[in-house]
Image 1: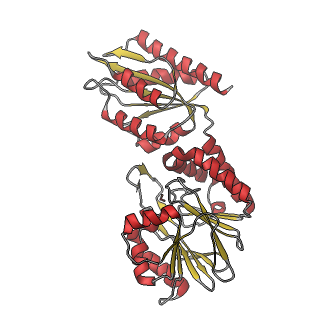
Image 2 (image 1 turned 90 degrees about the vertical axis):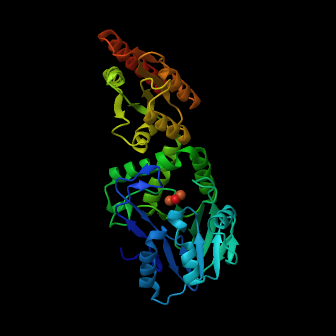
Image 3 (image 1 turned 90 degrees about the horizontal axis):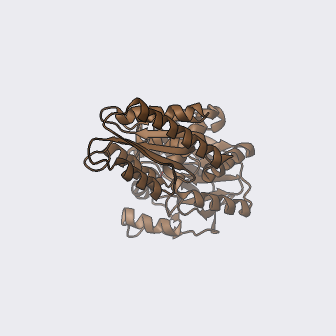
Length: 401
Ligand code: FEO
């Protein structure tokens, strides 16, 4: 896509990765993504972030559209070193020979470890540092662990823009550039997906950072993340900031997710019986087989659920591998405020619910008694599972009311 002038003299020069489905090797992006970067034309020309290396050609074209083929870039601002944003940095340094490369203190360390550079003109800009581009200034705010240690926000007070890198991003490849041009419900859903799979473990940092930004009293009327749609206007900026507070607080809804794997349908039948018990008590339920869902899709549903029920038959004295994958992924994302329960069938040794329950306990969940069934559930054991669903529903209501 061609560059877009988002404010006078400030251009979106990013690229749209329409068919990206594997995002960073661990999550799914059903709608593709964008790598946004920004060019500011002032007395000094500044480029904020690059794009993934495979789009180096497209990025050069976009920069040439704005600057002309021999265009010069004086300053690089690198808000984050992950390769979807800094992937073209080495190529861009070679081509544009910038006068300065500005990055956070942790960014400098990450830059060295990624690029092993020798004589790049890197200048570290801790929080509070300000540089002049001529008519404009750029101010830097470290946003450590949102979501890497090097993360930084760049703010332009004259244009009231915050360039926020991964924060507030969504994986959505679109021809539109602004959030007010697309369907809001879908946008919110993709913001949630992004948060649940990438930002979630750092929720306490999100709250602290948002509070610090509020105390800095920055006048913001445009928020430009490095993925997806941008937000323009004060109301839009307030909406997205409030949304992140809501996400970070992790207040659960009256919702339960049952995630399971199954060999011969016993655990699956148990899962469906638990779901009926929950639904009959007015709890919204998702039943998700690991054979049909990617762990990042499951995690998006777990994110705002009050209860997580995990199911697996016993397999080789443990659990099925897809459930082990799910539990490892979920634990790393540190979901808070959940009720947990385990279900599973077994043939002889029967370790499944013990292993599952231990994993839920390690995640700090409030545990409801597990149920395990030998080989095939009977009518009576399915009634027990139905009752477990009702018990979990009662625990959800007690927790939320
Ligand atoms: Fe979009 Fe942390 O990279």
